[in-house]
Length: 210
Ligand code: PRP
Image (cartoon, rainbow, N blue to C red):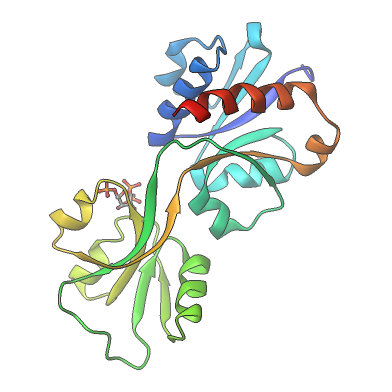
């Protein structure tokens, strides 16, 4: 079983894009994988083992070496600061992190509240702006926070912009562009596993054309 290359894949919206990328790179992966509820899937003919985890947990599986490589959003990388190497920008799932809030609202409070899934990233941003804020960690539906008066601002992912628009929020600042990355455990990378290098070469060829 050890001859399998284990790849940690994010469940949810990035998964489908990541599978398509691997298919384009000529990995023979059964398309049923997209609808499976299994969390560990072996693809015998490619000697690939997929583990499906929450996007935020991908760098953790890779850092601890239970996965050799993983596909993780740059947002997660910036927030988690795990001991992993970023090998390739896969250029999939493009979006950005923004500061948003209700329109025409100034932050007047001494210590305004900012709701986010990214407490470390948000704290760093406001520190760099020289603004003191109180960070409130939420795990989803971040856009509710300004509407409900829980926070004056949010720091969150914007993809199509629909969630902001549908909830009557506007952007105040663009923090950083985000795409998904191929990441690797540093020890495994140092061992020069040919399958990892081969994956980088093949995916790189595809992403160059994206
Ligand atoms: C993400 C993000 C925004 C939304 C942005 O949430 O946190 O809420 O997508 O996408 P849009 O710009 O295309 O509308 P997600 O759907 O992951 O759900 P969550 O609220 O549970 O985090």
